[in-house]
Length: 581
Ligand code: HC1
Ligand code: SF4
Image (cartoon, rainbow, N blue to C red; front, top):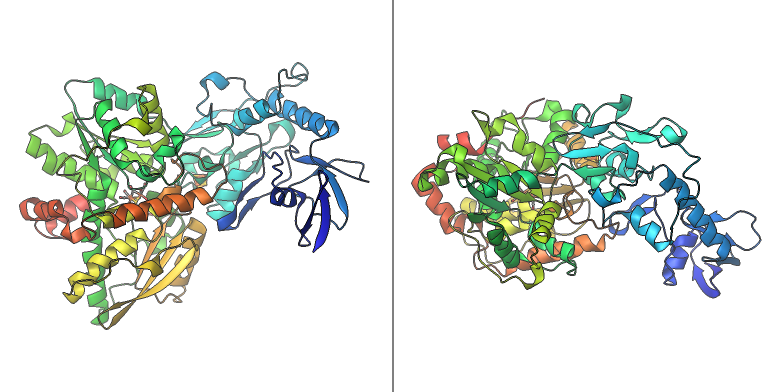
């Protein structure tokens, strides 16, 4: 170890520790803008570009960027001298001089790290504004994400997420000097690029350069239309994070409060995507057993492993990057889309409402869900099964706009029939949850025996790639889990090269699964928030009376009265899909 003195306090740190980290250990928070660290996931963005984190090092002429300068033995550091504070302010003024000043109307206002920094550093005037030019770029609209590059401050966090974590490689820095921005190759629009809409770049963008497409106005319009019946479905992960937008601690479950807020917003019925997650398990679990049985009986045509297919960012990824393997994932649609298909057939018929007059809104932690809802496969005569998909953040806006205080809302229950769900449906929201839910059902269907213990702890956790063996009464199933598209890529390459020994694999595009989706409250680099959301998801599961999808009474009724059996012709038509290369 080496000894360093920071702001007159001594600390011993291992060689190689940066000044920023040594200070952090002393409880000294040095401000950063471009730097980002997601500790539990080994993700670090350290371009050392913004220079906000500069500090004074005794005996050194120039100020040092603390995020990228390593401590040396005996080093003496000062983190807030007048010189340091002046330098930080000057740097920030330069950044602001080439940044739009429309904070009042910016989608990121109130959540912008650049705005926060201007407040923190007490910037009252931008001295060099008159002498510098503003660069101007087009605004790029895609079905899920808006890029407003005038607001890009070149922190490169989006690049780290897209290239290092997701290995999608859509974003990279182009041009030089004032003209430099982060963009797809050849300044292509996102929609024409390899982007999967996973939204991980949006989740870490410190400014309003990357935001979601906002559908709140469309939803408010539908709610105000007396001729429309408007129903809403809420994704598993939303309840574990929505509270953060209202100042509640990460990991606070707000399921009942969310339901009453949605009801007060005017939705005719408040339903649950978890219901459709149970339905997904019926279809996907049956498909798994069917493929497994055929495979074990020597049918060479049937391939294993089966891959889950509920995550639209992941679906986009394999369609674009592994077109030769599109016959491996399950054909089951995602719960969002199964919900839409059932709502616009079974439920619309029950209500005697015409398809066009039933509006289905989804609340999702995800931005790719916006794109998924617009895919042609999920439309009937141009009418989509899911009309609008809002992110968790957009729902928070709607609740705030309606002057509701989420914390003090009463707890209410979802409506029936499409609001009844089991613990298995809830855990879809955390990495490993889909395959655990499938295991609970597939085990009982395959063995005919009751599971004594429904918790498969070995499938849980935050490691990017996990594997577990599950004993199906003598038949050992190898189960794999990957979250984050970079980890998914490794799994897929193993399958392609014949190195994979898995029977079934769950893949989620976002680190942590849906709880870490691009539409969730921003975690600003604090990955402990993701863990707390995951804990909340498993708490909700363990508090449920029914914890296996096939025991959901409303799912049983749906099969008895409408679908027949899992993978029946009707189920195929409404609940399964095909992929395109
Ligand atoms: Fe998800 Fe899913 S779990 S994809 O992460 O299968 O978004 O929460 O709604 O559709 O149920 C997201 C979450 C969500 C679907 C389900
Ligand atoms: Fe890359 Fe995902 Fe952002 Fe698209 S949405 S640019 S794939 S990080």
